Length: 176
Image (cartoon, helix red, strand yellow):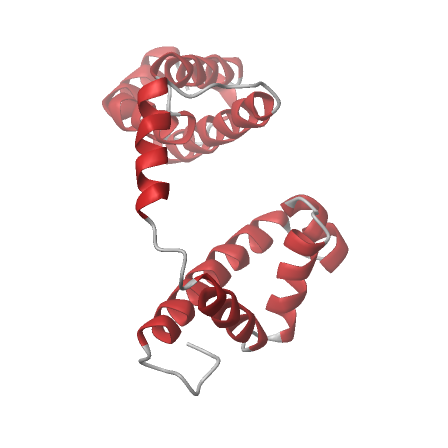
């Protein structure tokens, strides 16, 4: 594809792409940098696209992967929260009722027991053995994306199950 075709295809999506980058990175300048990195990568591969749809799909994947790469790099940098944010967190934590903590722990335990064996194994590797998602995938012989999606489903299932148990809607059933 010619550069003019590339820009004609990608420019209408610029706002959405920068918004995606911002939603992952939570920083305007980093989102803009990720977008620029994506454009550079696209232009380096300008002759490899089969058409506008292929270009768009590829550009979105490159942008998302670049954002994840930046997140991984930032993971090891110390970031301090603004004092006003810390005050909000303190207020929220002080307002929480901790009396139901033992019941929540019991609900979590019972809900985990209600998961499939594969889901329990995933949780065990991730949280009890402290493995990262890609390490869990390797151990289980699965793709990392499959593990991340499974974890998202497990979180949703556990959240719903715990909520039901805490409100007494489903006291006898350990699965949601």
